Length: 425
Image 1 (tube, one colour):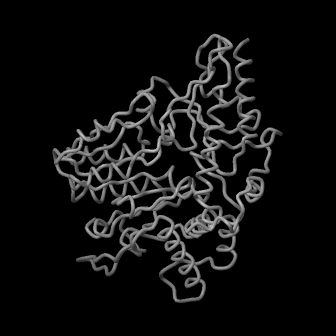
Image 2 (cartoon, rainbow, N blue to C red; image 1 turned 135 degrees about the horizontal axis):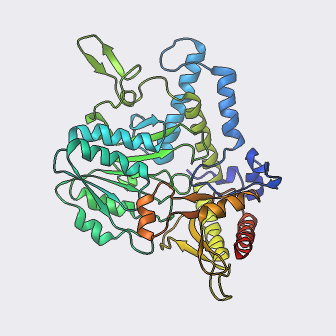
Image 3 (tube, rainbow, N blue to C red; image 1 turned 120 degrees about the vertical axis):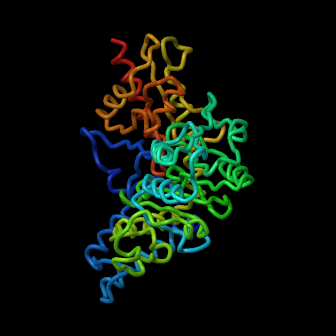
């Protein structure tokens, strides 16, 4: 439900809800453009965590005293909030994990245990984050399976013809990112899921970069698994979600053993708890889960449609502003954007040239920008195969959230111009 009218989308009033945005870095106003890495937290999320520790700090699902009941009620309210947020059919399909990385490892290990055998194939893409590469490599090594990779074209889009040709009767799962953390490419995941299902292939979608920026409906997508992290969704670190269709989660063996995930234990045999608790061994990250619920409530009040529209405006403005920087000549752009897909989220990866037309190393760019209080990401962004595909060691990356402004983009451009002058000496 879009309840955007509850909070008028005014960027200055929104910025006032994020205490850290009023901070200074090296004596300069903070310009935070590293949202694809982690997002900042609104006051309501901080207060929800504070309230948990002040008023209800207790373990959950195992006490009949007042505090435990309060904490359990708050945690399960967050589960229902997640269910509604992504439109899962059932509460029990929402599994709380530490983040996207653990969610993918859980599926790779648990689903892989019973569904993947020697000679089977796992299908991913060339734009995946390392967390959606390495777990599948580990599975392939254990099971003597084969990892197949969908190539990426020069614009940073998936080669859909190659994808169709790579699907086969030997494919056991397709694991694909919804939005590339490096390129900003929005992949046609609904189309890809439908194609994979023609081969009865289940699909895992890495939604770490999508849930903060656009509306996600797992039933409409028909995703078998959908995973994301709280810390990119304006929630605390160390909390994430695995959504899985109940039919798959019922078949999958537990990933961790311990308290809460059991029904009964003897030295001869253990029986496992029902969903979702079968996959939630041990004491959960209670305050993180409560904070995630508060973050979802905040995002819903702002309105995902409003967020998506505003961030697209920032993307268009930022792209044009960066391309306006001049390079070795007055007619040559100083910025080369890596990833120019037709469908993009608010992420811009780029290289900056000096006065001689040579690329300035992104680490140098990031360090110099930081002196002016401007935070961008530099490096390979946990996508080293993608860096190799585009022939660069690393990129600069500016990623926008709905609390960013065009004035901050202007500050970034001015900062890059200063970097150019330094390297012109």
